Length: 300
Image 1 (cartoon, one colour):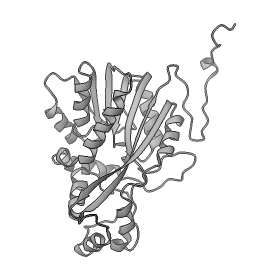
Image 2 (spheres, rainbow, N blue to C red; image 1 turned 135 degrees about the vertical axis):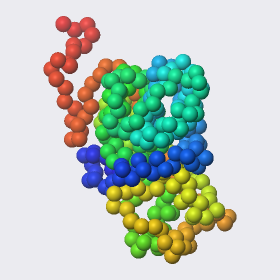
Image 3 (cartoon, rainbow, N blue to C red; image 1 turned 180 degrees about the vertical axis):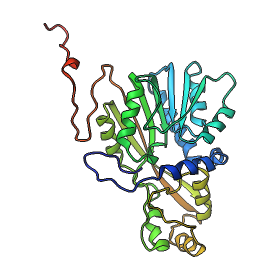
């Protein structure tokens, strides 16, 4: 996740949106089989949803990919209208083919920071591991807050800074330096961004999940199959040569002969307040007009 435009951070390494869209288009045929982490996190988000009293008439899945999360939500909320947004049309085409014939699903090619929906349109917004690929978290969260209805819920997962720590530490063995990598934000920074966006009742949690691979090639193969590579604007160009691949593989630790890939998964949810207020700007100040100020109940 590239650093958001918050008051406390200078801009960091940036994801290349064009490269990300191309990677998503290429990964569409392989995504479902390889998206082990996304499936696991989906189940854990659904467990959290069990604890919340929501019955949405309309729900939005952003960064919907091939629609696995929307299909899970369709089983939970069969009467709700489901909207899927993703920047890759090929991903959405596969989601269309997998939907049930009675499913009320609608599809939209869009980035999560620029959604073509009216204000307050959705009762529930769901995002599973899509936020790490945005360059401006504040903009995305303000947009989600805009399209969620008063008393509506935003529920999401992301990745924290301990994600792939061993791989990051091993990179100098292959490149002589640490190439630009996504900057995954601490859950407290994400929680602050939710508050700046004008959302309330913010709850954040994190846990460490480990996926093991037989070797580095298998890990990189899954990364390509899910469009989860380091698609940075300032990324090294060219192929990972056999020499660099061997050096990187040798520098990585093993557990019982397998390569562990650790992911710090961040879970969060927040609500749009019943009375619409003003979100804070980049300086942390919320400005409201005089016409938005009302008397307290019972006053004259």
